[in-house]
Image (cartoon, rainbow, N blue to C red; front, side, top):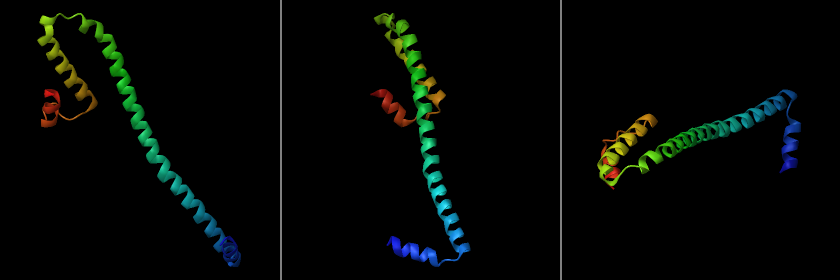
Length: 109
């Protein structure tokens, strides 16, 4: 197979060999770009998501002492506060409306 390919290339004129090399390089470059660019976009999106989650975690850790200090009779206030905070976090991230059917079903669970 390799010998027949070498014979075929040897029979080509210099111009045709140059075009074949240029075409091969173009195919390799396009293949690499077609793979690397989408992967880089995916990695970037995941890195942003992780950064947002780290920010949320640090915020939750900073608020935890305040929430743990609430008494049992403050439970309705705590629930309302958590709902408002959840809605605000979703809005900041650009998530769907908290009033959608799926969101209401998730909140009811």
